[in-house]
Picture 1 (tube, one colour):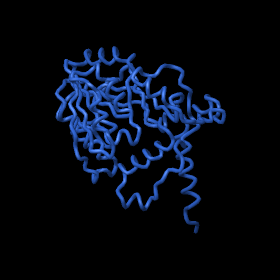
Picture 2 (cartoon, rainbow, N blue to C red):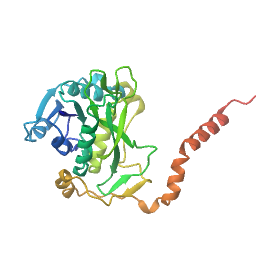
Picture 3 (cartoon, rainbow, N blue to C red):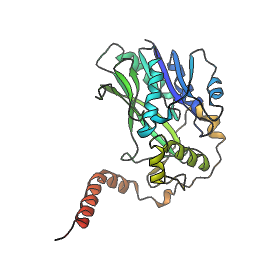
Picture 4 (tube, rainbow, N blue to C red):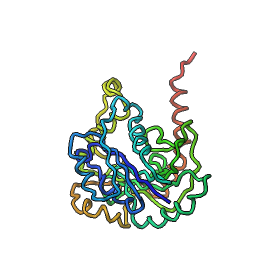
Length: 291
């Protein structure tokens, strides 16, 4: 069994991506690692090169920013890295995702278990989304994705899809996957407030062209505006994150005391699709013309 890791990154320093930690967290499970580094406004290439491993294959590219509408740029560049992979399995990690070392045995075991089962095209992980600081994570499964495939079988018919969060067949059909007992820690919303605002604005440009941005007038006046469903993290972070966490020093108020009790939050989340339909129905009823 041969395993290829792959990732993409651009402007890692500027926007605070823990790309070294992300790659390092799965490197022990990989026989090679392909990273697509977009030409950046900072020293991202040097940062990636600081990972001293013979497994690394670094490709520097000029990303085509005209493809950014709908997040297509992310999947295009992810596919460029994927196409260079040579393993039986391909392990994708985004630059703000980290795998805890305690899950290494489970991932390795699943890859070995299904290597000869051609009906299994991918391995699906749980997700934990940290928010505001390393001490809190999101507990809202309606708004935050709870599972994604990150290990896929190398095949010309399997590609990064949409905005790079998913993998599918080229015709758009979903992969046949197995859920495994492993979790990805997502740190995309843990940055100093000023860096978080810059990152949100920059990330927004990956989904809208210039005309749409001007028309929508997108801006973010606050770093963290999705409070109300946070939980305190009481376990350990991955070892590769230790130094970064120790140097974090920005203030963050999760406003936990303002949240409803957990039982009430969970009931509200369970019925959220129904309440959304009711609000939409009521709005349509009120706005309909009367004879």
